[in-house]
Image 1 (tube, rainbow, N blue to C red):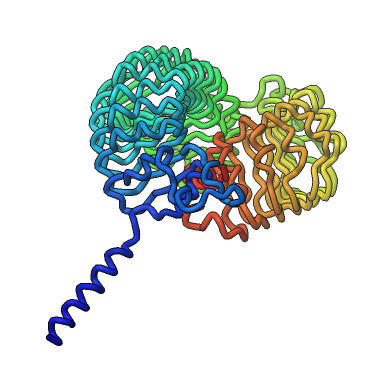
Image 2: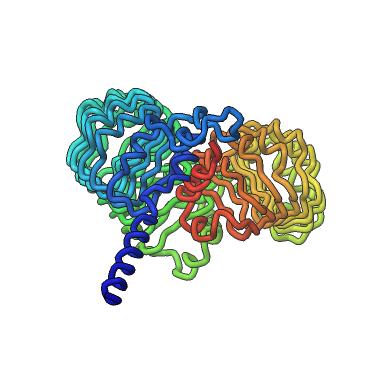
Amino acid sequence: MSRFKRVNQTDSLKGFKTEKTEPAVPYGLLKAARKSGQLNLSGRGLTEVPQNVYRLNIDTPEEAKQSVSFGESDCWWEQSDLTKLLLSSNQLTELSDDIKLLPGLITLDLHDNQLSSLPGALGELQELQQLRLSHNQLKTLPVEVCLMKNLRSLTLRENLLESIPEELGRLENLSELDLSTNNLKDLPSSLGNLTCLQKLTLSQNKLSCLPGSLAQLKNVKMLDCSNNQLTDIPSSLSEMPVLEQLYLRHNKLCVFPKLTAPMLKELYVGNNQIEQLDSEHLACLTAISLLELRDNKIKSLPEQISALSSLTRLDLTNNDISTLPASLSLLPNIKVLLLEGNPMRGIRRDLLTKGTNELLKYLRGRIKEDPETADEGPTAMTLPSQAGVNVHNIKALRMLSYSEKQASDIPDELFDAAADQGVTTVNFSKNHLTQVPSRLVELQSSVSDLNLGFNRLTCCSVDICKLLQLMHLDLGNNQLSDLPPEMKNLTKLRSIALNYNRFKSFPEVLYQIMSLDTVLLSNNQVGGVDPSRLLKLVHLTTLDLSNNDLLNIPPELGLCTTLRCLSLEGNPFRTPRAAIVAKGTDALLEYLRSRIPS
């Protein structure tokens, strides 16, 4: 009898434990979701979506059965319909038709699951604006998904899709479409109907051609066709008027694409089979600032490459180039020139390893002297003064340089020689200047690039604000703590370097310069930044705030989706964690957006 009692006692305890098993979705989460309209079930190991999640808007909550007092602080009858449902990083293999019971959903995140199909009922979510389906096992996309008239963002990265329904063109409000890393061999012609599209990612597929209807995408700014099997690029791409970034890496292109896209700033055609660059093709790239040509079979560069006046970075790594045209040194804004892996002749190996500036100096030395100065005798290149004025640089390169002289002021002879010469580049860096040279205003009609870095400036003169053609300004490594409000007049300014100064806050006037695309503010003492005002800088792509005093990063910074490079390393904030920051700009912005309170 005693043994029998012990067995009974054990079974009773086991039953008690079973009753206390934690449900798949804690009731507290459901209760909070009724109030906030948001439910985050990511990373919970779910193999299916619990029925009480689908019925969240329908079923009467438990608290309604327990209390109907109108004095309660938590009023169950004031619940909100679910608008945001996050189910990412689970083990879901299917989605029930009951998803239609949540018609108010605006965001549905199903990425990183094991879905092989989607229910047609998904098409009934007519309020849905964001649908994330990346990292699943989808082989087809149901037509019903293409009926969501309000859908803004559709991400299908890393699935098994072999085709896309023609009905895709009905998503007339779609602004972002990611079809990368699938098995697509062609695209529907209706793709051209997505006239609101701004970002289109088609990389890592099996595309051998692009539909001509892409020309109808008048609002696309970024197009990624990397890692496909493209042998040609349709000339119709030139009809995309706002295209800024085009990725064509790792394809089978043998000819450099002829593009006249007026806004194209970045073109990546590395890892192809291009053998020749024609001057007429390059001449069309009027706004290009980054050109990647690495890992091709290019044998030479045309002299007309000097026409790319906006070019700042040129990557020619691993080609068959043996000589360089001296005109390459005439590029006024070139900052990075990569040439490793080319069979260079006539240029010493040690010169190639010294970097871009030394190489450009060497190429400038190979430019023939201007015929106008050839008969001017021994003083044609240098005036008899301590300034050592390089007239050749001024006349041929439109450059006024007086750098690394340890000077406390700039000799007048330099400005006299530069008068009426249309100087575009001024370099007075690495001196002991304590104030901006007053005679700079004499160059206000032409100068577009000014370098005053590595000096001892404690304030920025208003005179700089009169240089209305200025596009690039380097004030790094000085002792500045503020900028004059008149700087808002520099309506063409694209980049400003303020690193290694004494700024304690983000310079107020920078919020008002709408043309800015690059702000370098590292190694200061900046304690905060206003994301709502940064959002108005619609061209901003690079923001460096590393090594400052930022104690917290506002989540709203994640809404600055134009940013391609955001540097926050070396600040004392605790969130986001260093591991998230290390993942790169896209991951960081996505994390910040997920932290924005509804």
